[in-house]
Image 1: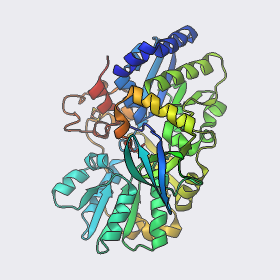
Image 2 (image 1 turned 180 degrees about the horizontal axis):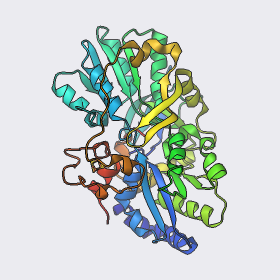
Image 3 (image 1 turned 120 degrees about the vertical axis):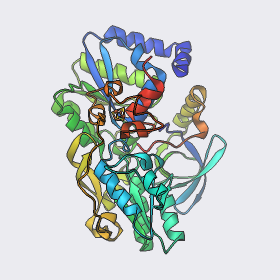
Length: 80
Length: 361
Ligand code: SF4
């Protein structure tokens, strides 16, 4: 499902970033989002970062999701 | 019901429901157009918690369900060409065409591959120069910018063996078509969350401005949906329809302009056929003329017969919210998630599949 879990950017190499979500890491392309920096929280879809979330908002979202679902590892999903 | 129970413990859901009940004086019908909302609504049992005055109906939902039989036929044809590998998202391979699905084509020897990101299809083309890789791309505005960026990288690299078959669809045009459906009488929309991450709120402006109906961009947790329902009820009860954002943690009013720029660099609007609905003018995206060499519909002379919709399937009415899945006579009998007859039963986010799995409670 499109849960929109924010991941934290831990590495940037050219147009690719490594983000950390619930302990797992993922490679995400940055072609669709300008100004992504180390430590930013981003939402990704189909392998591309699409939205930057401010840290407060991101931590709040992660907390809500942790409380409510088991899906943090599932992260990506539907095509919509 | 686990989520709702948890919310109930916190009392927040109960508070929202109480507010909805006390605000609601007349019958209102809201439609969710995104399949992820359909699944979340069924899973949480929200429909049954709302007062009788409020009904939620499911709309076209997922890009897989609205891909026309004719487009599946073309994908099947492409997958059977010598030297072609057809890559697509998992759910797409089970969607019935007029004849067979991609899954059946694969069983007959066609090279059909499931990918999770358009990037995987690009990587496949780069590492297999002798293979013509066709990416069969379905999706709404959440996904299409990712496909456009992938095409951008193929263009940059001058890849001769990467092609797109784009059946992308855009959401706002479909909402207009649904508002124009006289049988439906929708009072407001639960607008899709991540589609709006890209689009922002501007493309929904016509809903209050031209139709006087409500619109709320909504997140995917049960509490999000309840809060959005309250906002929709308030807009209509107070007679001030507008476009509001409930899902602030992932959507801003301006959306993602960079993603839209990339999207329209490589794609342009075209008329598009939605399964069971109609051809909706300007509601599809095709590869721009300039990049025709990467457009599978231009690079190959696709030959398919007149498409036929599946017999006995009521997907068309289900996708427009006119029938509920159990009103289809094949539902749960000839048509189940294990052996789907229609597209709405194929996808995890399809209305029939959600209804079958989570039922009415
Ligand atoms: S139950 Fe099956 S056949 Fe009936 S409308 Fe749904 S998908 Fe189509």
